[in-house]
Image (tube, rainbow, N blue to C red):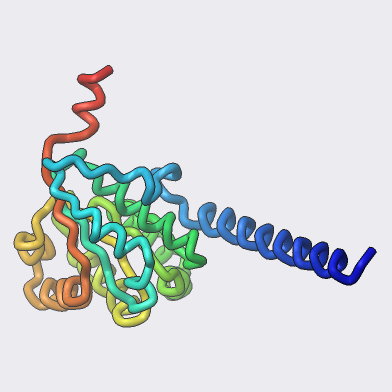
Length: 216
């Protein structure tokens, strides 16, 4: 075996080992993320005109620079227009880039907090959530917030502000968020921490789920 043959074989082994580690890391990150739509990906997003979704915006977010810069993404629009799909696609892309992501529906995260308070693990739970590079808070604003929920949501955003990134989806227009939070002081603090450096995506059009039902 010549020196060149050895170098080539060694290089192939190193490349294979690196690729194997990357694939294992991606698989681990995706399992940990628990994305609601596990098959969602950037390549699967479509851009019909009525949706008013800018391909250049998605292409920019796919670079994940916004995560490195600790920015947020806010996705709004009526039910069924694909907010959750885009949120999960962005989180999946983050995992592909080596970031840790976590998906939670907002109503479910409040249940987790109640359990954590009950068994005394709330500080540990907060610290765990704060370590994720990206968290997806899906279905924000479906129901009015209780006082404890307002404070818990602000606590999460306080931990992430300037340190980590958040993707939030909501059927409710941003202009109505203050009324939804209920407490003006907490609403100001919550909106400031989430929105001031957020990339906003506002989706339009009819429910895609209903359209698929009609096609079937």
